[in-house]
Amino acid sequence: METLSEIGWVLLTSPLLWLTIIMAIGLARYRVRAERRVFRMAINPRWSEVRYFIGHGLFVGLGISCVTLLLGVAVNLEWWLVYQIIAIIALMGIGHRLNATTILLVSAVVYWGLPLIWPQYQSADTNQLLAELLIVIGLVAFATGWLQRKDAGKLTTPNVIESQRGRLTAIFTSRQVYLAPVFFLIPGTLNLPDWTFWPVLHIGQTTYSIVILPLLLGFSFKAVQVLMSVLVQRSVKRQIQLGVLSLILGLISVVAPQFAIWAVMIALLGGFVLQWRLGKLKAGEKRLYFTKPYQGVRVLGVQTATPAAKMQLTVGDVIVECNGLPVSNNENFYQAIQSQPTYCHLKVQDLQGEYRITESAVFADAPHELGVILFPEN
Image 1 (cartoon, rainbow, N blue to C red):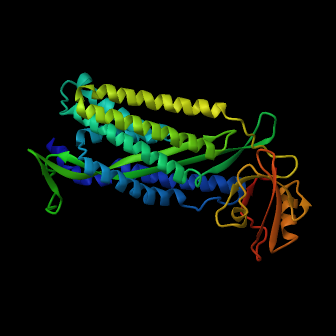
Image 2: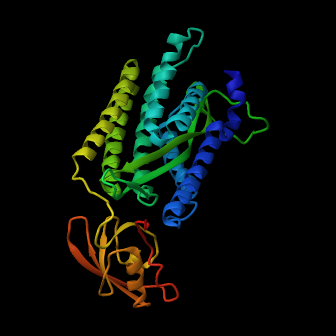
Image 3: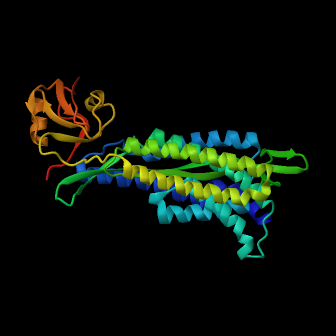
């Protein structure tokens, strides 16, 4: 479509791009405000979500682009508009359950089904597009797994709720969005005003333009009675399985394009099954109760580059002694820290009930700034 070609040069300023930028900023502001409201400090650096959105999003986009250009993956702008609409709806409606591969799969199904419900709409080479999209979906699944492993733990933030028994309990969340700019081939020549430098490829009898289309990626975890690290590890495994399944189905569809829509349906079903299995595994894990203890103080978070990080304190640990003094609440814990203003010696009980001793030098001018996040006092 000529009109779509004429607007191809403004894709980098698409509504999806700006909406995702706004969400990344909003996630950072919401997290920091929530942490300061509950714990009177920001646990993670203030703009972590924005930094990861830019740096890791560009890195993933470059990695996927290398593969798509090497394989000659071609899409069209008609599909891109369908994808963008679905991604925007997902961001605005179910952003807390963002799933990049599902959005891509749904966009493929909708694009394939448009001529069935709107006969005037005619799409060319649909089967070939679906086959190549399956390869892209496989790459996105691998990239999502890498991002989860890389960033989910760093962006974990605790929240404190009251249990049915009236005790303070902690749950943990980790949310992030990315926009990966990916290079694709698009059949035809785009009408870019005065952009004579823009590359145009001639492959066989077909002319292709190279365009940059931003793909939405992200994750959202909520760990209740389970360690965030365990939840992320399971999810990464599921992403790898979905990536392998999508790549296999994509390669089959390239050879046999008539089965492409069935391959997309299988991948979509496989994604739901893997997500369901992830939920079942969470339910089958040994339940961990992050409640406020009657004796000692429980660690809910550890700030980076602090004495607490050097002592390898982890979420769920209970500090029972500090500098040889028993600990029962935040107040006497900090008093015990200041009893030795240059060094801290802790006795810690982990989630398995095992005890260990750990120690580190502390900040001489601020011994109370150990870098450990505890339950707030009532």
